[in-house]
Amino acid sequence: MGSLLVAGTTSDAGKTTVVTGLCRWLARQGVRVAPYKAQNMSNNSMVCADGAEIGRAQWIQAVAAGAEPEAAMNPVLLKPGSDRRSHVVLMGEPWGELTARGFLTERAELAKAAFAAYDDLASRYDVVISEGAGSPTEINLRQSDYVNMGLAQHTKAPVVVVGDIDRGGVFASMFGTVALLDAADQRLISGFVVNKFRGDVSLLQPGIDMLSSVTGRPTYGVLPWLPGLWLDSEDALDVPARRLSQDSSVLTIAVVRFPRISNFTDLDALAVEPTTSVFFTASPAEVRDADLVVLPGSRATTSDLAWLRETGLADAVASRVADGRPVLGICGGYQLLGGEISDPQGVEGGGNHTGLGLLPVATTFAVEKVLARPAPTAYEIHHGVVTVTGSASEFPGGCRSGVVWGTIWHGLLDDDTARHAFLTEIAALTGKPAPDGSVSFAAQREARLDLLADAIDEHLDTAALLALIESGTPADLEFVPPGAPKLSAP
Image (tube, rainbow, N blue to C red; front, top):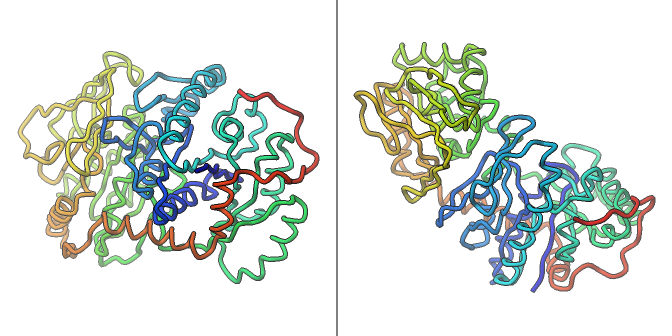
């Protein structure tokens, strides 16, 4: 039936939101639709039913589409371990490590796999809605691009550019996105969507009209600011916005913001409870004062362990445990709460390290990554193999000692029964209100997806977008000067 690539003027402009909403809206129309992102850079990932690892955003987009999540929806996943090095997941499996400079030489191989994955999806679904990465006008990378305009040229898909008006400069960004592309790429840029608008849309109309005049391309609609909407996140840009309440009467949950934090979507389920206030922090004082502290996942466990000690957070965590105040560790956070952490194969640089010593467990890093789905909502993504070495109580995916809990399972708290039981015990320890057990996290997620699809239906020209998906890029799109010199595709 067709395809569409949703690009953005910047990272976090709203590409993920628009793709997710379009997937749910199309699924409502009875269209068999699949999401796709050729390359995602994120430490938030998910394990599919077949054991493949993909970006969390593509997983939630598949849920929105009513499709089974699979590796082809996110064939290349980069998981940053430092500012210059990333772990590469290719078609759901560990592939190796890449440096920033080495990545430029490896793109041809990754592009080949990404294009093959797209072609496979397109052969099995009516529509594929692709999400770009960053901006399509990364002109320094265009010759080897396979994520934005390189993908659009491979698929001949029309491209819609999303801009975040809340950040300002949206019209200049949209114009520049087109004007800096070469003529071949410009021919695929079909229009725009304005995201996160607050106020009277009529006040925006003169700018929309001028943008159309200078680019020859329409704006397909203006999505409003949706304060009640938050989706499973793909990167740390969302972290600061997660404090949901300042009410001191509810259970305050402080999540330690590691430099290499990963899979912090584990905390989404805690945040939907009306009796909790979840916030991310690197403040020892806030860690000492919160009712519950969570050490989340980490992409660089031993590095984040050193950071904990350098910042005084390790002492703050130990102090609260000595005072009988609860702590939960998830995956990397669980490993940090234990004793010995050994890395004989150099997975994280090698050597032996001493954890916080608050749980009787030891961790050994193995070269082979564990990818598993041990329970309906739970999944495992880790190199560190944790062994209980002393007396401890059982806890799903881990253990408990006194007021310290640890689990290797991500997604455990997505299970309503497990979450309510855990929070009830924390409430008893702290004297704060316990949840009443009425909140269904899965139902809340579905409600958010439907809210987004409703916004797509109400505020975008869905008839025009559907025609664009079915018929492809209009033939009469204008060239916008100056345009870049012609660059070769990968």
